[in-house]
Length: 93
Image (tube, rainbow, N blue to C red):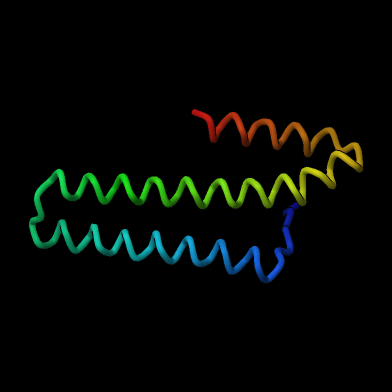
C-alpha cells in the first residue's frame, strides 16, 4: 500500500522553496565545472548544497514527526513507528 501525506500549503511552499534553492545551486555547480572553475571553489559550493539538503531533511523530518508519527503513536501503529525508526537509522549513517 502506498502511503501519502497531504501537506499544508505552508509546509509544501517551504519544502518546494528549499528544493528550488538546491536546484539552483546544482545548476551553478554544473556551470562551474563546465567553465573549468578551481576545484576548491566547486567543493565549497558542493558543501553548501549538502547543507541545503540537510536543512530540507530537517524541515521534512519535523513535518513528519509533528504529523504522521504523532498520529501513528496515537493510533498505536507499531509498524509505522518501526518504519520511522528505520528511516532515522538511515538518515544517521
